[in-house]
Amino acid sequence: MNKKLKYWDLKAELQKGIIHNNYFFTDEESFLKDKAFHQLKTAIVPPNVMDFNFDIFFGEEAKANEVMEALQTPPMLSDKKLVVLRNFQSMHIVYKKKIAEYLEKPIADTIFVIESDKENIRSGIYAKIAKLAKTYYFYHPYNESEAIRFLREESTALNKTIDNDAARIMVDYIGLNFQELHSELEKVALYSGGRTHITPEDVQACIGISKGNTIYELQNALTQRNLGQSIKVLENLMANNMSPVLIVIMLTRFYTTLWDILIQRFQQNRSKTEIERSLGGWGSKSFMNSSEYYSLENFDLIFALLLEADKKLKSVDAKLNKTVLEMMIYRLCKNV
Image 1 (tube, rainbow, N blue to C red):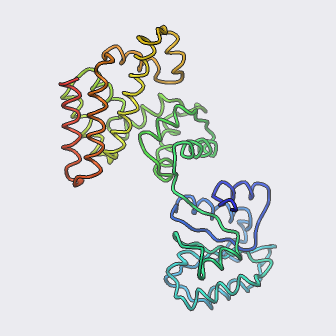
Image 2: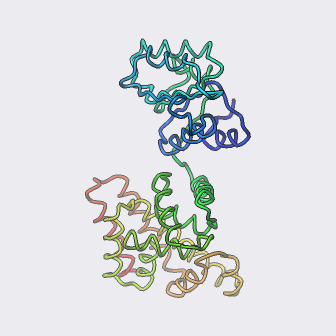
Image 3: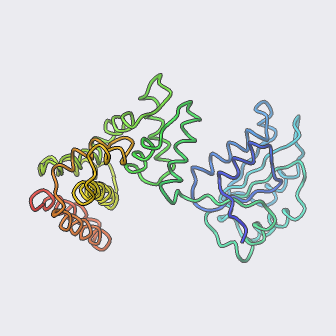
C-alpha cells in the first residue's frame, strides 16, 4: 500500500524544488491547507506578477468553464501560473466531471490544485482525481508527537526554538489543534521577548496569563487538598474551554507519575536523587515535592475516581460535565 502523503511531505518536496502539475488536497485540516497554499504560491509565482498568474475559485460558486479558462490562459512574465479550486465537494457534478477530464491532459505551465473536504477516494470521481493528481491528506493532529513536531517547526518560522518539555506542556493544555497551537505559540513567542529559546516557564506563565489558570495549578491545589482553590481553578479551566476529558487525562498522568515515584522509593529502594534524575526535564522537582503528600495506599482510590469520572464524562449529558468533575475533585480532596 502506498504511503499517504501529508503536509510535511509537500513541504519537504517544495524545499527540494519538486513541483507537480496537478495536486489534490483532501481531508479536514484547514490550517495546514492554508499553509500549503501559501508555500505553493511562494514557490511558483513571483510576488510582482501574482495578479497575472494566480487564480482561486470556490466550488460553491464557480462554473467549470471559468476554471477551464483560467487553466488554459498562459502565464504572463513568468514560467508558471497557479490555479486553485477550493471546496471542490460543493461543485455541481457536471462541472466536477469536466474538471476531472482536464487532469488527463493538463497544461504543462499551469499548476492546478483541487481542494476538498474528506472524501472517499476509492471510487467514483474522487478516485479518478486521486489517480491523476498528486494527492495529500490534511489530517488533524492525531497524537502528541505530531503536535510537538508542529510546534518545533513553527517556532523556527518565528525565529525561536522550543524544547520538548515546553512543547509538551502546550499540547497537554491546548490539545490537538494546529490552529490553536499556532495561535498560542505566537503569544508565547512574544512573551519570551528578545530571547531565542522558549522555555517551559515561558509557556506556563504565558498560558496562565491568557487562560486564567493552568492544569498545573489544579494539580497543586489537589495535592494540598485545598477544595476551594481546586474548584475555583476547575471553573476557570472550563470557562476557557479546556476539555473535561483532557482534564481527567492530565490528572491521570500526574497521579501516575506520583505513583511511579512512590513505587521506586518504597518498593525499589531508589534514592530521591536517582528518581528525580530519571524523571528528567522540567517539573521533576514539583513531582517529587507532590509525592510527599501521598502514600501508595492512596492510589487505588485515586485511580478508581479518575476512571469513574472518565466513564461518566463519556456517557452523560455535557451539561453535567462540571458536576462530574466537581464530585471527583471533592472526593480527591476529602477522601484521599
